[in-house]
Amino acid sequence: MDQTDETFMRRAIALSQQAANTPGAQPFGAVVVKDGAVVGEGFNQAIGKLDPTSHGETEAMRDACNRLGTLDLTGCTVFTSCEPCALCVATMQIAKVEAVVFAAGLADSARVLAGVGPARRVRTDITTLRAEASGPVGSGRMKARRALVAEAVEVLEAWAAQG
Image (cartoon, rainbow, N blue to C red):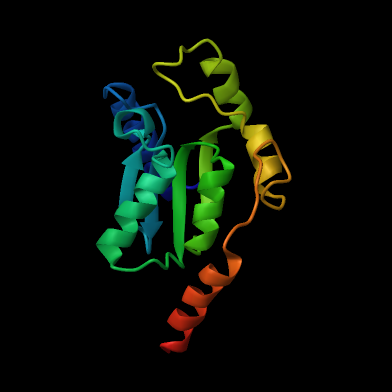
């Protein structure tokens, strides 16, 4: 790890420490870096915001997109205190993040957080999440069905026809 990576990782870990001291937050922090500068940062606030997508990485990417005025994070690297889950990896891919650098692995966090009570932790089996997220919707534990397909496609077609 070069000195620059260490600096950005230390900021991500500092954000995880800030989160650890914030009610309704969990100790996961992240920064988004572009051209050698932090353009976004955040930490997990899922419990406090009642938002299951409020992970450190997603909060940092939201901040970066707002600051940069774009959904395209091409050329950006996410530095995160813990290996990202499937939700965060998918969001990075949608935003075209170039790379991710992480500290603690999923096995580390699973081991350390195993005894943390439900009021402080949203329990997610990350291994199952990754497996189910990579398959077609409905192929895992969550049931899926389709309804009103023609009506939904009609809206899509009308929007696409606007140019």
